[in-house]
Image (tube, rainbow, N blue to C red):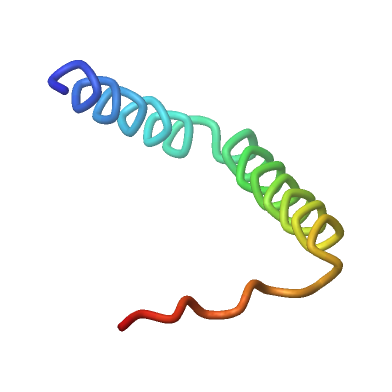
Length: 59
């Protein structure tokens, strides 16, 4: 758990430094992440035929 928290902080610092010193590269990373998100959503929608599962019936 400590290793996870340490890696989380380290990656946050790395991405902040990229944002600070290389803004064009950071903008490209954000753009790629957005395109990847759209692609994964389209795969999910295609796999489920555009439907969402019905809500669960909780007693």
